[in-house]
Amino acid sequence: MHYRIEAADLHAHLYGVTLTIAQPTAGQRVSLPVWIAGSYMVREFAKQITGLSARQGKRNVTVQQLDKATWVIGCEANTPLTLHYQVHAHDDSVRTAWLTTQRGFFNGTSLCLQVEGQADVPHQLELVADSFNTHKTWQVATGLTPVKTDRQGFGTYVAADYDELVDCPVEMGAFWSGSFKACGIEHRFVVAGATPTFDGERLLRDTQKICETAIRFWHGHKRSATPHTHYVFMLNAVADGYGGLEHRNSTALICNRADLPRLNDNKPSDAKQSEGYTTLLGLISHEYFHTWNVKRLRPAEFARYDYRQENYTELLWFFEGFTSYYDDLLLRRAGLIDDAQYLKLLNKTINQVLQTPGREVHSVAQSSFEAWTKYYRQDANSPNLTVSYYTKGALVALCLDLTLRQHGVKNHSVSLDDVMRALWARCCTGKHEGPMSEADVLAVLKELTGRSWHTEFKAWVHGTRDLPLEKLLAAHGVKVQHDPAQLAQRLGLRVAEDHSVQIKTVLNGSAAHKAGFAPGDEWLGVDVAGKAPSAWRLKKLDDLLLYAGAAKKVTALISRDRQLLRLNLALPDAKANSTWRLMQDNPKLLSRWLGL
Image (cartoon, helix red, strand yellow):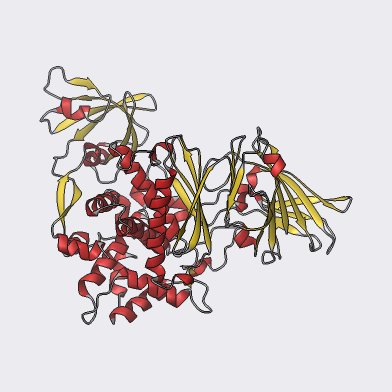
């Protein structure tokens, strides 16, 4: 397979793709994936394809579309076949493709048709320099293996098969670029959209610490066993955005431009900027940890991706949740945050889960399986229907880690670290290539501890009761302080405030639910019986406390479909709901957990 990629029209955001198939079958079928690995949602990438045509030699051959993403070509067998088409690329995310006069980016799942029956042959990708590099300032960054490229990186690359081709995104543009070695492995970091105040050297230093910590976590002193020989971070800095997508030897990231580290500001005085940079480092840590956990050690259901439809698994709580547990923990071990900062990040995760009613009706295993329809297609009622396999999965990892550390085995300390490395040895070494099941996790736990963990998994993974977090944290030097919840949480609302209060979500069982609030309502004002004046206009939710005073009940004045309604709202006591605040109670116990 040979894919020639060029800029058909930078202003129209169009890639031109020419696919040459050396030995097609008669009536060759081709298709474009409907999803990209790591993002569990059917995205219909084929909707951006236009002008698909085919030739054999000098002869045009027919192209017939069979379904939303599959075509059959009216060609002869074993005579080179050339397909040409264009792809519109104006999605500035990590999942699809983007093309402007300033920057180009794409995943192979958005541009590269899969040739039926030939997914396992070598695939070449050619990037045509002249079509992109009009000002001779553009460079290329990708995890693909170069065959013949120029100094800027334009030219030909090769992948062993289609899976590798679409698992190596391509970044193009006049980006900032730097590099470092982590445990002897070459790493490149490119940043598009950075401002002149961007401190690239600090980002390289901090990322190097993350990578070295992760490599040592998985391989200790046997660093030659790492699954990658080089790695590329591709970061797109924008006005407002956040996210990442893991790949086998690279990752695509997006962040707020303001969260980048700044020159002459090693310890930012702006707490918000400092918090933003820590969030960015956590994202880097998360996606890099995926190099092992999900790209190699992966669900058995993902042994071979089916790009035509959803690929279901109940194990995202492990692959995303456990990665979410370790991303911030490795920042702590790398010395990039301290104990207090780590507990603050963990605190946020705990409160997110406890403030989600869906945790009481949807297990984290179910959440994993239904990611395609529930987690990735959220609406106003999603918090009542499901729980995030990221956040609750991270707390399952926390409970497992703290339980293992608490009991040990025959005076030998056992932790979740040992479980992860044992799973790697069991599933990713020798003839094994990575597929893993829940049975493998249970088997490793039994091998390491000598007892069954089915009871915990039934309760924590497949059940909906709250996890034993407070008890386990107390045993490791962390005290839980229960503080009054914010007003929105006490009422059971998630809102937007812009000259009035717009209701986004109503949490089941809450005071707002019982009063009859609904998503889409506009909360205009409040009537407090017995007060003079009694009716007040609300501009923000906290105005309610100002106008209600000591009242136990108020009448909410709302607009619904331009009808004015009055809802009787019982105001909950400040102590009715609480939020957790984690506090260091025993530094010695805490250091045994966080200091390893």
